[in-house]
Length: 403
Ligand SMILES: Nc1ncnc2c1ncn2[C@@H]1O[C@H](COP(=O)(O)OP(=O)(O)O)[C@@H](O)[C@H]1O
Ligand SMILES: [Mg+2]
Image (cartoon, rainbow, N blue to C red):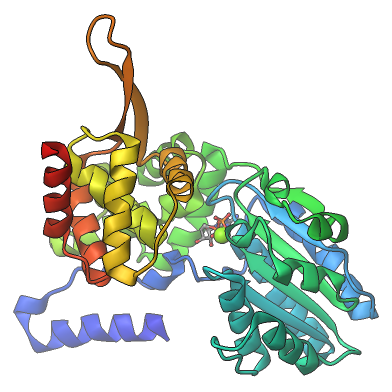
C-alpha cells in the first residue's frame, strides 16, 4: 500500500506542476522502517531456525520451553522473533495463540496490551490480580499460547506478571532484552524459580554482514541507480563502528534519501550520508529521552539548566519540588539517586568529584555528558508535554545556586 501511494504522489506532482518535481529516489521507503518484516533475514538464519524449532513444539500440542532472546540494540532480535511468529501463525492457523507486545511502563499496562490482542478489555482502574484472572479466563485452556514480551527488562525486577505467566501450564514466554545481565535483575524469588529460559544470544553484526543486510533492504526501498557506489559500504562501516546496530544503518540510509529529495538530487552520495549522520544522532537522542521516566526527564532538565554546578543532593531537592507541583508525588532521594545512576549509565550525565581547593576535600557534582545545544530543545519539548515550563526549572536552579 505504502509503495503505491508514494509512487502515485510523485507521479501526481510531476504531472500537475513543475514546481513539485520530486526526484524519484524511493520505490518503497517503508522497506527501511523498523516495523517492516522482510522475507529474508541475512545472517540470522541460524537464530531463526533455532527459535522456530523450539516454538514449533506448540504445533505438536506441547508447550514450548520459555526462551530469552539476548543481544545488543539493532542485532535483529525483534524482527527475527516477529518473523517466526508470523510464519507460525500462517502454519498453525488457530491452533496456537501468539501474543506480542513491547512491555509497557508497568505490568498492568503490559497486561492490558496483551488483553487487547486477545480481544479482552482490561480496565486500568481494576486491580492487577482481577485483570489477570480475566485475561487467564479468556485463554482457551486447550490451546498453547506464546507470549512475547519485548524489552522485558523494563518491567523487572519484581513482577507478578512474569510469575503468573511462567506458572501457567499452556503458556510459553519469550522474553527479549538488550541487557545481557537481565536474569540477574530479577529479584523476585518466585520468578527466579519458575522462569528458567533457554537463552539465545544474537551477536553484533560486523561491517560486511551489515552491508549484506543493507544491500537487501535498499534493493526494495530505492529506485535503481539511486545509491552511489560506496554508499552501502560506508554506511555499514559507520554502523559497525557504532556497535553493529542495523537499525542505525537503515535509519542513516532513510535520512540520506530524505536529504537527497529535499536537495532535489536523485542520487545518494557519501557526502549526503555524512549530513544525515547528524540528523540521525539527534533523532536517537530524542527517542532515548522520550523513553525516560518522568522523574528522569525532570532530573535531566535540572542538570541541563544548572550548567554543571549542582551537587546530586541539590538536584534531588529541586526535582522533589517539581514533582510535587507536577503530580503531587513525593520521591525519596534514594529513589532519585537510582534514577540518576541510570541516566549516568545511559550516558546522559556523569557524576564527578571536584576538589574544593587545597586541603579542603572534595564535592560531588552532576555534569551533563552530551552537547547542551542538542539536548536543550528536546528536553524543553518533553517538559512541555508534561505541562512543565522549563523556565520554571531554570528559576528553581538559580534559587538553589543563590542559596
Ligand atoms: N538480518 C537482517 N536482515 C534484514 N534486516 C534486519 C536484519 N537484522 C535486523 N534488521 C533490521 O534492522 C532493524 C533493527 O532490528 P531489530 O530486530 O529491531 O533489532 P533489535 O530488536 O535487536 O534491537 C529492523 O529494521 C530490522 O528489520
Ligand atoms: Mg527490539
